[in-house]
Image (cartoon, rainbow, N blue to C red):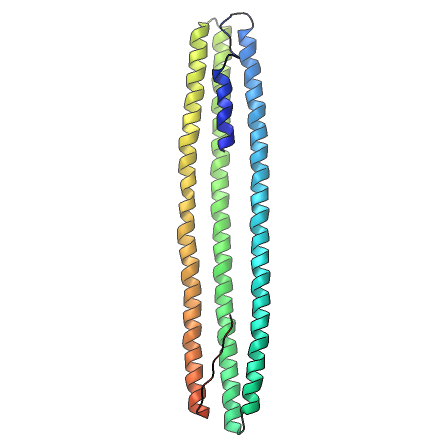
Length: 240
């Protein structure tokens, strides 16, 4: 939104002359130019938003793809490990212990993945909600800013046509535009504070993932203990 602010400088140059001839028309002309440039700035803002949104979506897709590829690799390694365990099992008791261990680990991994995926999806949905809220707030702010600028010029034209002192017309216009600019900047700073909403979202995702991992470790340790008790030797398992 910073792109909109410098446009008000136009209202403080010599486009508004001190001569009476044509000054009312000049103010109206300048108002149209400002409005056109504000429209162009809004268009650029929307384009930038789309670009950012596309980049975010691309990053999400790449992360999902990388995670899926890693999981497939981990699954393959784990199956190979289970196969070796089954080969080493000699008695029915050992074979049953391997099967029980395999089932416990597989179910624990599935539960962990579901919890992690849910944490990621919840985080993304919440981020999208924050982005939408911020976008709506900025759109409303821009709308108000344009209305304030338009009102300032309309008043200047009206005063000019009504015979108000030209120096006063110019000073009032500058003052009104300055007020519009200051209000815009202050309100925008308040909107920027919405980024603080991201911190609890990040923390919530971190805690959810940590819990999923801790729960998995607890189940895995029990599965290992049960397996050791059954066959008298340990094993280990890895992979997200």
